[in-house]
Length: 464
Image 1 (spheres, rainbow, N blue to C red):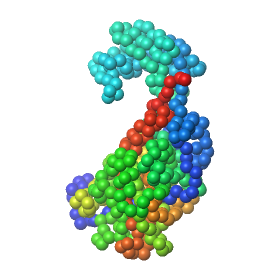
Image 2 (cartoon, helix red, strand yellow; image 1 turned 180 degrees about the vertical axis):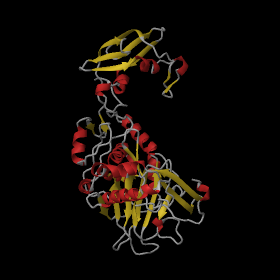
Image 3 (cartoon, rainbow, N blue to C red; image 1 turned 135 degrees about the vertical axis):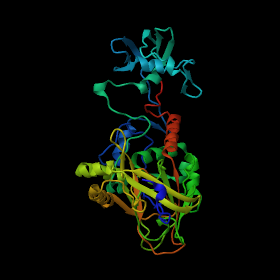
Image 4 (cartoon, one colour; image 1 turned 120 degrees about the vertical axis):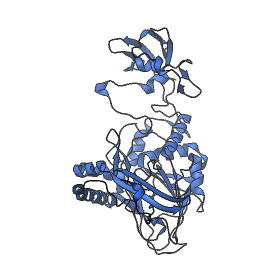
């Protein structure tokens, strides 16, 4: 399909947004979820918090680092090409020879200043094996390789990188936290954060980033009800992700708008920017002024939870929405001039493990071009309608009204948001928003977890 031949007269804008409300509830603790795949059951925020508190000990604003057991013994297993470590507290782990040689930490193989491997690929011997291996003071393993090279691996480095045998393997991605899907029952106990604390206290910022990754949104309270606050918050975390709507954007009623969000009519449930290949992952929406009459309410739903329900109740419809390519587009003119964005992706995107990784849902931005066989169209529409019914079901969708000074922070790859209609007026309602990439938010979380010595696969302390 040649997109250059598209009609040049269409001007339909993105549905930029509103987001979720956090009612009164106790904040979740400064903790980290177990690292694993997607969780399909609904969470109880208090139970999640209590369970996590067992893995880390909060001391004021800090977190005690988990102790690393000593190494009791090391055994070379030439028949399997593995080094077997026995820990002083019991238990064993295995490490492939080729992986150990590839990850030698000596200055010739690894540059510590940049945390980068400098060992040349062509020098890697796939059949590398140790001539001898021994425990050094219970804190490290020293290896002499058959080619005469020497390596030393600290226990604190080995433990978080331990392998599992094939029969016991469970995928545990070390870079992100396991999401907790939710329905409307979570309205009773939603995560929240304080804007002043986030701006001044790293532990508050860390807690926010963890909750955001787990639940997909956090309500930030206490921001000044004036422009510029989303930029301040984004700068505190990393930096704004610029789009063709600019760096930050204002949602008010406009003449001749380039986006349906600038109208006062209802804004359907949607995720922003489905036509971006590298779609901004985190969105901030700040309520500066709220419409005081009936209307202008926010609608928020967890697209992951609805997708899990669709997979369970209607597996064939789930298969259709995860495999059928859909054209998404946006065309118009705004802060950066004229634009015409086009992308083809399924409504529900899954990764190589089958986990939901991105939701594309926006009625205004779903194109009329539909590159599938005509016989498959009706079934796709039926699946899409069923998914929307689950998204909009009051059992799954939150309905509330934002108040000035609150900032909705949410996962734009997962959370769908909308707004009820309100009476037209140029000063009736004032919202400001921006985006930040998930790469930057996760990076900030990793840095802060390291600062506080939190237990994880990436940060492990020494035995006390």
